[in-house]
Amino acid sequence: MKLSTTAAIVTGGASGLGEATARHFAANGAKVTILDRDADRGARVAEEIGGFFAQTDVTDEESVQAAIDLAVEKMGTITATVNCAGIAYGIKTVGKDGPHPLDAFKRTIDINLVGTFNVCRLASVVMARNTPEPDGARGVIVNTASVAAFDGQKGQTAYSASKGGIVGMTLPMARDLASTGIRVMTIAPGIFMTPMLAGLPEDVQASLAADVPNPERLGHPAEYGRLAGFIVEMGYLNGEVIRIDGALRMR
Image (cartoon, rainbow, N blue to C red; front, side, top):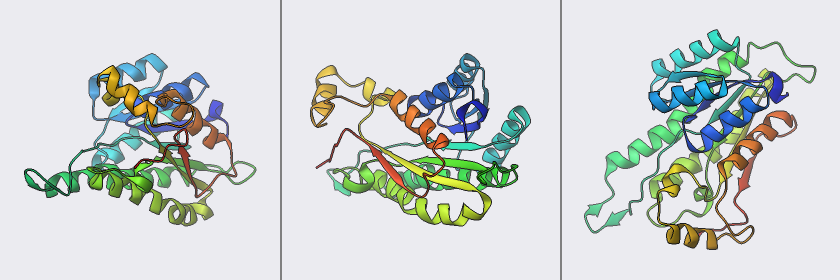
C-alpha cells in the first residue's frame, strides 16, 4: 500500500497524535476523513488538509457507522484505519478521597478499548470488500496503545488497563482478519507533546523529558504520524506492537 493511494479514517484526528497523523497522510497524497467529538476543531483541521470530517462518538455503534458511511461516500472506500481517540485519568486505586470511582474506570475502558474495537470491527467490513492489491492487501489498521500498557505508573490503573487491552487484541485481531487481507498493528507511544502536556509548566515538561534516555525530549506528534504512515506502506508488518519512546521505561 502507498500513502498516495490511501483512503484513511483517523479517530481523534482533531488534535494531538490523530491530527498529526491526518496531516502527514494528507500531505503525502492520502484521502483522509477525521472522526472526532470536537466538531469545530475537527472540521477546521479537515478543511486545512483538504479532507473530510464526521463528528463521532467512538463508543456508539450508530455514530461510528454513520461516520464510516460518510467516509465511504466522500472517499470511495477505506483502506486504512488509525485509532487515536482516547482519554486518561490520574487516579489511584485508593486515594485520599476513597476508592477509584468506578464510573471513571468504566469510561476509560469504554472510550480507549471498546471504542477502538468498535471502529476496527465496523471499518473492517468496508476494507474487506476492497479489491485486493497484487500481494492480497485490502487494508490496514493502526491502533494506539501506550508504554503504560507495559510499565504504567501510579494513578494509571484505568489507563494502563485500557491500553493493555489494545496490546492484547493486536495479534488475535490480525489473525482474525488475515484471510481478508487486512493487517493490524499497534503503536505504543511514550511521552509526547500533545495538547494536554503542552499546557503544563515548562519545568514540568523538562522533568518529564529528562526521564527519556535518548533523545532527551518529549516525542513530537509528527513522529507518530510518520510511523503510522510507515506501517501503512510496509506490508510485512502485522500483528505486532511498536514502542516509540526514546527507550523510556517508566517507574
